[in-house]
Length: 293
Image (cartoon, rainbow, N blue to C red):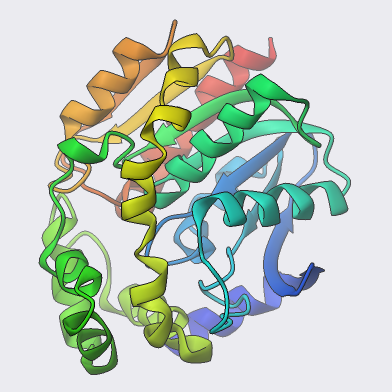
């Protein structure tokens, strides 16, 4: 099956929900306790497609593309700040009738999660979190090892040029370099991820979207201290071979979040839910089962 066919099958599983000025694509499957997913950069909620069959056996899972990603709207005039993304996701979950759920975040989504947790300390959110799972995200941005593509996209002149000139070949090469094993993901799946990135002028939005890295530096004093006071059950689920959000970040999170559990996935890199969906889903389900007892 081609990458385009995988995309169309994914599209058929979801729907679009209007959230403010945005059309947000969401896949909402399963029944039971709710799992709320925040995806990473530069891909989309499609990253979670292979883990959904296991997660949805006992739970409702909501996976949405944030504005600028996947099949959601990608407006030119939008801040793409992580605080704004948090607003959209919280409003979406409330619209879907969610009152509580397990928060699960990967990559850029881990900082959206941190923004939500910081707000939670100050006032009630429209959704109550039952647990938090953070996976392979550069929460401590000073410890991250940015890829060449990320560094180019952040350049004020070269960024737009690089985004416009990007190709499926370069995209695939960059992703395979951050996987734990270069051949762990089939080419057709990378085709689908690239097609979703490009949809709706997605490549043109990359220089604006990647400003989230600057926001990680700017908001560190707001977002990080609440982690040290977090009283929710927490799982740090990390691919050990990640060359970007390195294992030391996961270890530091496990030290700083009170009572956090650290699960290392050996031979897995930056995209554990894509590279080894079986082990990733198994670790999540085991954690949820302990929390829900």
